[in-house]
Length: 141
Image 1 (tube, rainbow, N blue to C red):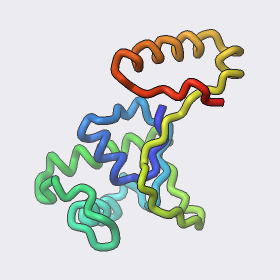
Image 2 (image 1 turned 90 degrees about the vertical axis):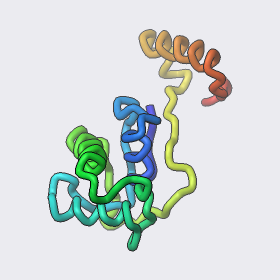
Image 3 (image 1 turned 30 degrees about the vertical axis):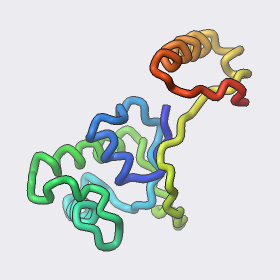
Image 4 (image 1 turned 135 degrees about the vertical axis):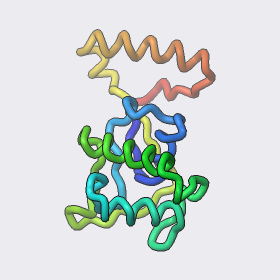
């Protein structure tokens, strides 16, 4: 499971297929908007395509292409409706931008020992990760 720390970069990764939305636990963003609100969405789409108040993280996409816009909005609405979009600014917090924007989650050994199904899944993940050259931190506590 992944925790995202950048709305624009995480949504871009999901749209581009680098991350599966089902692998996302939550995206903690620096935004304060509702993707189902047309007016608010228009501001987000323009801002991330052209820049201004934020970095133009979606500048590789055509602002005038309705299909491009629909992809980004659908991912945004899906995150929103699944409760996976957390926006601390809605509560008065102002998180800073971080260089890294995906964090991997992992169950601690004590949980794996109590949960045989999770342990089996973790063991299978380790086999697959080893085959795909993913570096595992074996001493994670």
